[in-house]
Each structure stands twice: as structure tokens, then as C-alpha cells.
Image 1 (cartoon, rainbow, N blue to C red):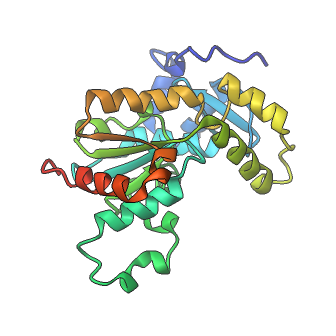
Image 2 (image 1 turned 180 degrees about the vertical axis):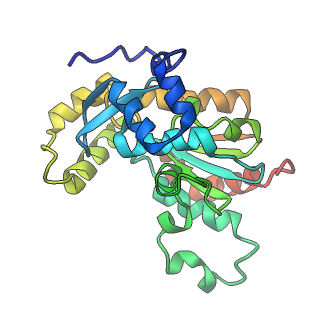
Length: 257
């Protein structure tokens, strides 16, 4: 199968066509029909990844995204941590959870992070939506996503909620992604070599890719709305965790919140 142009916005597959009618219904069987007509390539961790609105998603993730775009309603008090996969999300989940709950934790020994995984305390939107299609908004005000900025539910932009975006050196992202996939892929999915992963990543045919389009979407948003979108480099945070964490703390408690 020929790889579709990475500059092509696959929303053109929806506008004015049968997909739009199906999408508006929002039923699971209709979502399956939408998936069946989208361009697809061999997946990294799943059988296929699908091209939707210019980015590639696994089948399960795309179902969650479609549900979010239909039904998710962000609140002004929400904080959304956004990252490309393998860009430091676990660490940032822990930092943001501690910052946003600092007034509720009277003693360090009471920090829930001592007994719970950051992924449990800061839910991932796509996964939560796929499991809760009727009400896809988690009860938490702090959430995480890998969804590109241009495909976020409209309410995440119109509500005024805050977004923290962390990006990482693409070489490290690629290697980390490849090791992650190699360990967790099901036996039914053929292995992907590092050379093949490099080629696909470079072409943009990777989960949530193209990588640079993902990063640039949030960078442009941070330039346009600096009071709402906090853009930080993973490597810079590692160099000076204390200073950057204090900056993040001050930013996350702007009076607008």
C-alpha cells in the first residue's frame, strides 16, 4: 500500500462524505466503518495504524479519539499534560500531580504517589474514553494525552483549560519507542526491526506521528497562547529540575485558573 502524503490532512476523508454522517451518529459500529475507509499502514504495537487528520493512530486509540471529539467537555480548571509517546510523561505526571495537589498533602508521607502509579493518578484521555464512551471525561482535573494539538476536542481550546506539553530529543524518542514496542507487542504482531522503525519514524508513519508535526502543533499554540500552553523540553527539565518545577508551579496557578 502506498503511503499517503504526510502533508495531506485526512479530515478530507470526512468532510461532506458518508463518514461525516457516520461520525455524527457516534455509534461503535459506525466508528468501525470510519476506520475501514481511512488510509492504514502496518502498526508498531498493533496490526494497523490509521491516518486521521494528518496523524497515525492504532485502532483502539483512534476509537477513543473519535469519542473524545464527540463528547469530551473540558473545564477551565482542567490541566492537560500532552506528550508524544516516550517523552517523559511518567515523570511529568508525578511532578504535576504533586504541584496541583500540594495544598491537599499536609505531609510528604501522605503523598499518594508513594502507593499508586502516576498513570493511575493521572488518567490517559484516549484510554479512558475508549472504556467510557458515554461519559469520556475522567473525574480528575489533571489528565494526560498523546493526541496532537490540532485534533484535541474543541472544548480543550475554548474552555481556557491549561495545557503542559513536554517534548524530547527525537533520537531518544525513537530508540525508547522501539524498545517499548519490542517488549510489549503481542505475539500475533510481527516484530519491527530498529532499521524499519527508523525508516517509518522518519517518514512520520509512527503512532501519533509525524513527530515534528506533533511538536510544532503545541509549540505554535504556546506562542499564540503562552498563558494557557506551557511548552518545555525534557532535557532542559533534567538539567535543572528545581528551577523548572518552580516555574511550572507558578505557571499552573495563574490567577486565570
